[in-house]
Length: 129
Picture 1 (cartoon, rainbow, N blue to C red):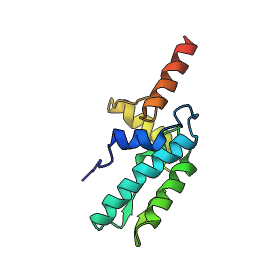
Picture 2 (tube, helix red, strand yellow):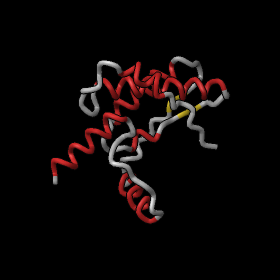
Picture 3 (cartoon, rainbow, N blue to C red):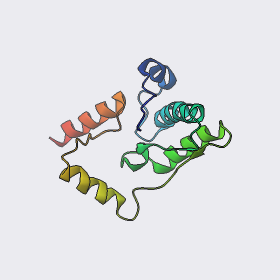
Picture 4 (cartoon, rainbow, N blue to C red):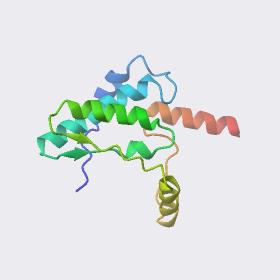
C-alpha cells in the first residue's frame, strides 16, 4: 500500500523559516527533504520496513543527489533501514514517465509541491507571456 504520512504544513513552515527566498535546489529544498524523508524513515522503521524511497528523485526541478543525501541521512537514523536511491531519470525513465503520464492523462504539476516553488513556477510562466 501507498502511505503519505508526512503532510504537516506548520512543521514545514517552521523548518524552512528564513529560507523562503532561496532558489530552487537551494538550502530550503535540503531542509524540506530532511524533514519529509526523516518522517518517512521514522514511519518505515515503526512498520518494520527495510527500504523506503521518494518520488522526488524523478522531478526534473529537483537535484537528484540532494534528494539522495537527505534520504540516506534519514535512513542512518534507523539501524537496518535503507533509502532506495534508484535513479529513474536514467535509461529513458523520464521519457517513459512523460509518455505514461500523457497516455493515462495524469496531472503533471510544474513545480515540486511547495508553496515557494509554486510561486517561482507562476512567475516564470508570467515572464514568458
